[in-house]
Length: 66
Image (cartoon, rainbow, N blue to C red; front, side, top):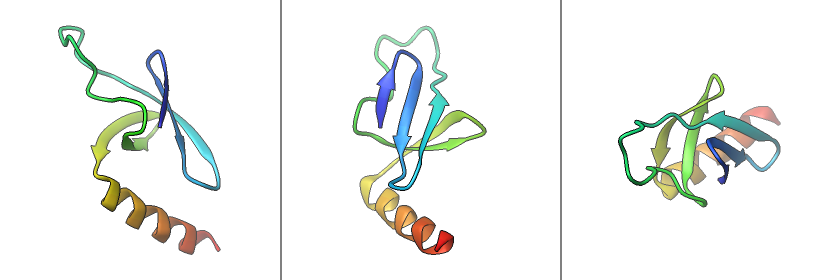
């Protein structure tokens, strides 16, 4: 994942998607950083996931669209 201000750019290997990062204004640090694995739903980052889970999901995604 790359981050441009409050927009995450996620590379799914066959396509890239953008998602808005919505966080509390009171936080000192962002929950997200470059290289994190996240789920984007409806144009919004909804969850950070572990690398192992992300790799498994990407394999299933690629298999499903073939």
